[in-house]
Amino acid sequence: MTLIREDRTDQVKANSEPAEVFAAIRACRILERMASDNKHGSTGRPDPMVKGFLDYLKVEKGLAPLTVSSYHSDLVQFTEFLQARRRTLAQARREDVRGFLSQLFANDVKDRSVARKLSTLRHFYKYLLLDRMIQHDPTLEIDSPKQWKVLPKSLAAAEIDSMLESAGRAGDSKFSAALAQRDRAMLEMLYAGGLRVSEIVHVKLEDLKLEMGYVLVRGKGDKERIVPIGKAAQEGIRTYIVDGRQALLNGRVSAMLFVRRGGSLLTRQRVWKMVKDASASGRHASPHMLRHSCATHMVENGADLRTVQTILGHADISTSQIYTHVALDRLKTVYRKFHPRGKRSGTAGQP
Image (cartoon, rainbow, N blue to C red; front, top):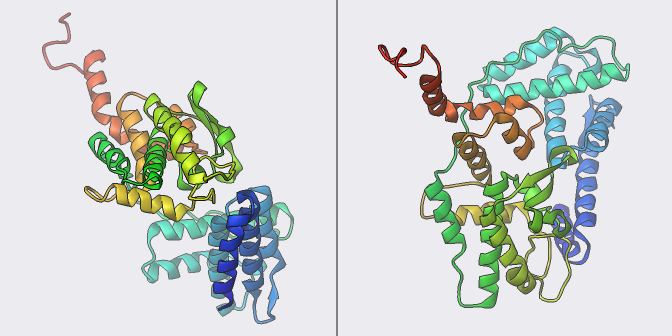
């Protein structure tokens, strides 16, 4: 009952407080709950090392509360494993980490999940080592589990057009027309810029530079990047700002570009539902599929990986390399056309 009351209180505050204040309050509550739930052994006291690590992730690394929560749950699971061996996090050895990973595999945990938990432990012990809380890193010389490279799912251009047409259908009321303009503009921006859901819901009106054709986006770790948007997206957004947004605000003021009725902050869940509804007539789509579609279609049309990395906000070029498969046919065509040994037999000497 307590959590239900808190959630209802948060909903009331969301309509009365600025979006930034509300987000900060929610983030602090999540971290407070994680810290209070983090017990060390049977003493019932919070582990200062874990608490310090979580604060480091939130404050210095700027990670989102949900990401910090994932780190926390992985550390709790490893702590419980160590308790069975009568050891603490600071006393963990390399064989303990290997035993933990082996136990995960024995319980049919997927490779990707095991790799993520190992990554959590590596970050945690690197933090402890740099702060001189430990002298040896138990995660050294432990290979990451081999993972199958799962190619991201993307939509065809015709499917994108169908979604945009579906989202743009409006009812008879002024409010229905405003929602249709907003949803179409959001789909245009998601596809044009490859934005994440968490990024598009926090785009401010001042971040948008329509006359220059770009938008300022704040991604993971609060890193800013400039994302270009095409003419189709510019027109859809401009129409929404002039008509739909004013109707949704209904005389109120909001700093956010995309708003709900009355000017309140748009939620990530609402964006997911909007994309799902827009793709109801065809293949089920998600906001992340639109992001993958943006990158895939750019590579198919000749974009280099560095450009894809910059637009999507990937911290490492290796993340963008998953899109190299889509350019295979184009690479083969270019190779056969320009490489002396790539041409068919008997044509190498012909002009």
